[in-house]
Length: 128
Image (cartoon, rainbow, N blue to C red; front, side, top):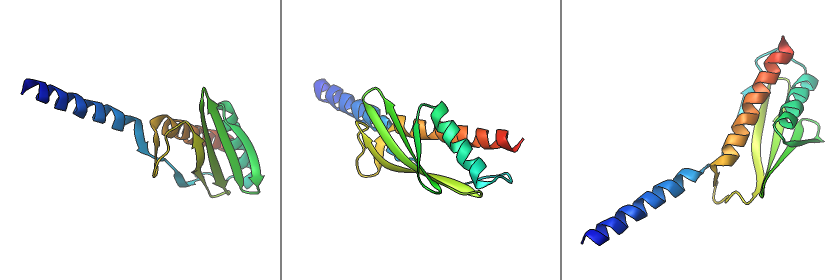
């Protein structure tokens, strides 16, 4: 009986730990540009923030930047839509991040969050 309890507890702990690594995909939707900046200044802030964080950044159409990050064996792709009023960071694809039904490894969300924070910081710096 004790063995069954131990196995049950071990399975529960394993599932809790495993669940902690997978999270819903973080997208940044219509983050406001809180300063009176031009579209070109917003573009510059996004490009520089991504490059500083190790993302490969490329404008694919006016108002849309494709960002790719390669870390060890992991790869993620986002599209960043922007204007002089707002920007959004949207998941496009990934490799080796266990994406499944809207969930992904938590490292992806950390990378996107860091990029978002850096963009906000760069926008504030340009506004000064």
